[in-house]
Length: 158
Image (cartoon, rainbow, N blue to C red; front, side):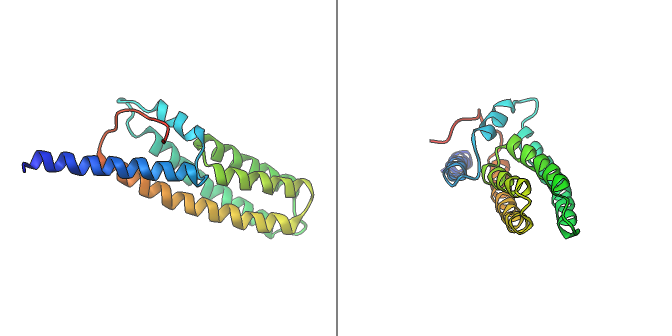
């Protein structure tokens, strides 16, 4: 067997892993159709567009998490400020298709509206958990994509 055919087989195997991983991210509710729309914006000129956008999301969300944590430590709680921070977090989560994170952000905002501090604290822990899980999963996904090299086009998971 030639080196080229072995490389093609390995690439085919990587492509199948990527497809399966992406399918799971959707089936398990981590991502929604917005992620596909981001992938559709990726082209030869900017082949790492999605990864760059997702990386920016995670960098920005670290700042938002810090701001929310700081606001949750103050007494009395400023629900308007908390809601503003979480509105930003929800918007950026939505822009990359981070479905579970976005849903938890919505729940947090409902607790802000109800002036329920305990609900905010509890839900914020869940926001951070979903954020961390998504980060790990997307890091693994992008690592596989980098190993496989350039991909043809974005497609819906089957």
